[in-house]
Length: 114
Length: 113
Image (cartoon, rainbow over all chains, first blue to last red; front, side, top):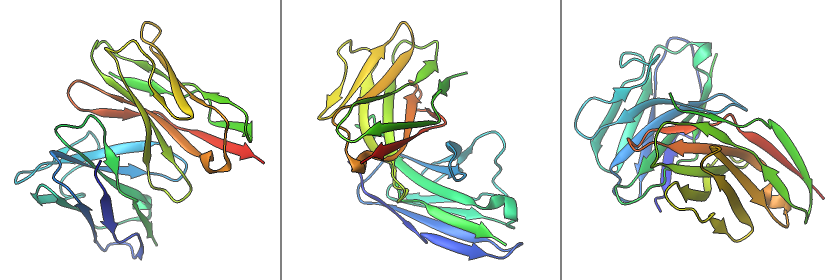
């Protein structure tokens, strides 16, 4: 299994600013994902982070709003740009190894936008 | 499109008793994976159990077992001898052959001492 950490664990931000969330995996994974989860709700996939190339975004999410980087197999960042209160949510990073069928999750980043 | 449905938003169980959480899914694929994840109040999503669709035998992990009915597209989770630490949000998930994951809306489980 993979152990995934995220920084920061939580933050309070002002409207119009940007926040970058970091995700670190303790072992190489072939696939990394970013999800958004409203409190008490299910997970919504934002994008698949691809190593060395542009992320693959799901419908409703765009690169200008949620730029993602993945410079290597164990690290990725998600930026929430030009934030508004509607962006207040929990952001989860996950990873999946090529030999694994299971997706493992980080502890999440709780974001509040004022 | 694949969908995952959890029809029980909330469930409760007496400590030491057994509870079953329901999950149904929709797919036209024949080879896929199903998962149950647990998310305690601390927020970390933890894998509870997984099932490979091509295996007829139901998966079991200690006190956790599944009832996988492929034809009915049903994947329920049974928790035996419930413990206080089992209290959490439980998500059912489907993984397509293309590695896309789909999650249900979750079932909040309360364990009553």
